[in-house]
Amino acid sequence: MITKLAQVIDLVKSKPKKRLVAAFANDDHTIEAVNNAVELGIVDAILVGDEPVIRQVCKQLNIDADKFVIVHEPDEMKAATKSCNLINQKEADILMKGALSTDKYMRAILNKEQGLCPPNAVLSHVAVVENPAYHKLLIASDCAIIPAPDLKQKQMILQYIIRTAKAIGLTQPKVAIIAATEQMSAGMPACVDAAILAKMADRGQITGALIDGPISLDVAVDEETAKTKKMVGGVAGDADGLLFPNIESGNIFYKCSTKFNNAEVGAFLAGAKAPCVLSSRADTSLTKLYSIAMAAVL
Image 1 (cartoon, rainbow, N blue to C red):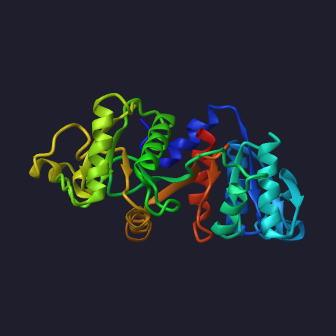
Image 2 (tube, rainbow, N blue to C red; image 1 turned 120 degrees about the horizontal axis):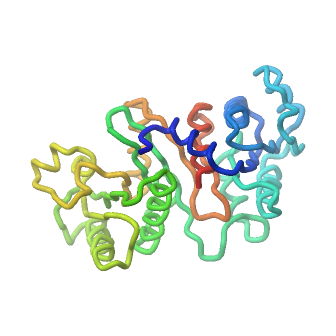
């Protein structure tokens, strides 16, 4: 069973190598992470950006720039568009965000003519979190894209969580639909949606996982709390996945995990034509490496 993000790298090595394209790869964190992924045999790589800057950064990091295919495009928006085109032309399998804002990265992905968004697609941020305070990996969504997912969008997010869990070897992942309370409160939309999703799973309308909700975060991840509150059913106290009711709760969970508890993360955008690595410009090269590994596994 995979319980550490480093184990995902070993899993990727057992699969056919993919080609990654990094959009506006002008920064040292992106280049260092991509270089590490290439050195580990996870991916081959294309760097799209300002070639003189990329070569200078490579020189500063003592990296041989010739191990990458470099596509010169000094404009960050055009670099993102070119990167998407490489995916559409089957010249790359994974998209990665470099030193451009998330807004421009998403604009390129969502472009109707040259982007990577299929018709009626639901794009969602999925984070695989290795938290020192938890006994296994946690898959959390949505932490960065959808402000307030409706019931249909939550169904899709559930599918992305389940797909991610199965990609790292979980045959029957346990997914908690998070709310502020595990009590069924009709006045709280998060509880209502959670109850509907759980009942859909009971009836076989959602398959591939053990799903329960509404569940509060403490009940989902702490066995003693689950016992104290007499929560049963298999998910409580041992969740593999967490579906958050809105972007605020997911984003706060993500940042509290990384900032207060030194959690490592592999994060990507699901629902596009190809997995898209979506990490912050402030993320470490290790976080970006793990994100590449997760995208390659998928």
